[in-house]
Length: 627
Image (tube, rainbow, N blue to C red; front, side):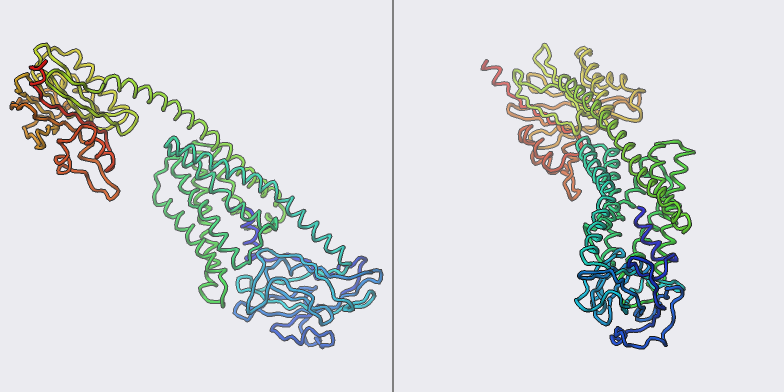
């Protein structure tokens, strides 16, 4: 939680230490007895009203109305006006005891202004305000004693038992008071300007890291960016309010606070557990539960309306949930910092806000250590930004280097798995489309000296760099093998892979097509070809790389001139659309007579999930005879 949130909550749930009512009108003047009375009656504003039967305030302090009351209280006192005050006069009113109330100010029975709006259309400033009001001519005269009456209405969420309030007043020239108000506004803006600039910079940095993470598809960078982009929201919200750039009501303030702080709280839990590879699910769920109870309790406690049992209970439950959330996150971060010793700068930076939120509940520490508390939050944001930006840059450089390596691997693989070309008597088309930079599919078309063609099509389990390395080994082995029957080719490849697959395997199909149309097929796995739009089913042996003693059978059939064979990898059949539906065998069979490019395009548009390989061979002996 940001310092301003803790400050505002402290104003509401802790006992206020305030100064007595005083008149700031130059030299020391005496102030009459301050009297108060609960209830509401417009006649009480009259200077001639006899308030001697009212209760006397203790050293200028009056108690707040009871929680289940109507919230009204009137305060009356008499304040001398300096003789040397000249020109049009005004009065400065400091909102009572820094409490969130709506009040109307009367001077000698004349209403001179309001702070907020009173019921039935109540509107309470989100932060206590100091207001200067112009006095109508003739309301007060220098050297006289003015009767001041405050008509106060306390929202339910600020009514606290055994809490005393006070107010401060001052008469002076209008221009002096307004100049002081302008100076106060400029001072508030300048005071909050560094925080606004810093948090805006952190927000921009987070957005930049998010873009880097999206471009590089790095989950780590996306986490860093999301953490940086959500952390400043609550701080920016408070800075904008305190700089008087925006002025929501208290009824609007607390829901807006929840909206601005909730993403940061969610992201902090996700970030802590993810970046440190923590596996304690129940503790994480407890942190999330405490977070939701706190935020929902805040809204319930501060929504406008009549006091109720639910709103009474909501505040202490919400505060207890906040402490639970802070204790869990702080404890986990300390564990990471001192026991696991991971991401120590990040852990240290993220530990400062929950530590500050826990300690600010102690009033003495809050009053005497505010500067240190402010510095803690500033350093937390600064350290977190530095650490995350540094790690994000390293991650980006690493991803950039890996991307360059993958591009090089892709180029090498493209040279190994070259597009097929027509051969005498055979019209051949091929498409190879890996799911990532490099893939685990492969094919090889090898013309033999007797005019026949050997075709080997395979699919390595998995995808990515490991599968691509296996492809490179298989292509290298195929290049070194002498002309062999398909079954022996598969057996040789199997022996080369056994013991090197790390629980993986390779499905592979070896086909030799002779010039007279005779085909000999041997299948390791389930890569059966399609013949003229119908799947050619043949018994298959074990996939390659599973066991050294695997045996592979051979099957033969004959192609007629014009017949077509189509070979597809699992990437076509297992393409999946947005609804999760597979492309399937039926759709594959229906389009198997089309060109290789059309088949691959159909699977890609449906939703590519795996490497896609399509190879088509049309038997055309007449072209050889014509040549």
